[in-house]
Length: 168
Image (cartoon, rainbow, N blue to C red; front, side):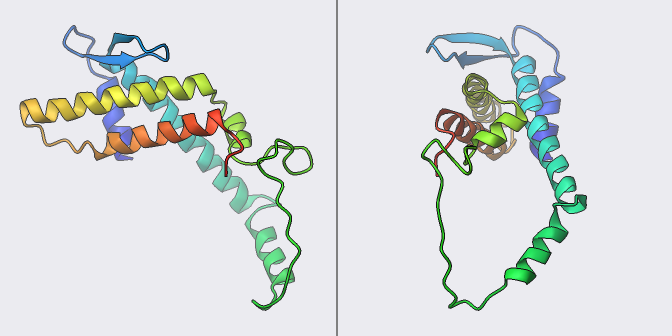
């Protein structure tokens, strides 16, 4: 929630000449973008993930195929630790389980995030991180840039997952 409140504050800032950040495009060109627009794009990304995860949790907890089914299956198949099982792995062959991909591809499809969007958001997060770090050093602001480090890491992982969706 801290990152959401920080992004909300930045996204609601007035658009002025001083509130710009240098964003590197996917082509390697650096351009100036309004800080509030960059923060707003990142806020929408984080909100999309949070809402999807919240909905998934509620579906799992309350749904017919959710938590109770998992508990029942655990009790049904609970075996001693020394019991041997035959295990198969259907990942990153491109074929997946019964022809459906495994890994991050299904998640990215459900959340509707593309590879290009992930890369753009990673560049936005890096620009915000640089802005916050530079502002903290120049003006003595005590804002914790760890939030933007985490956001940059999250968007980078999404970009990696979108690039190789069946990684393991």
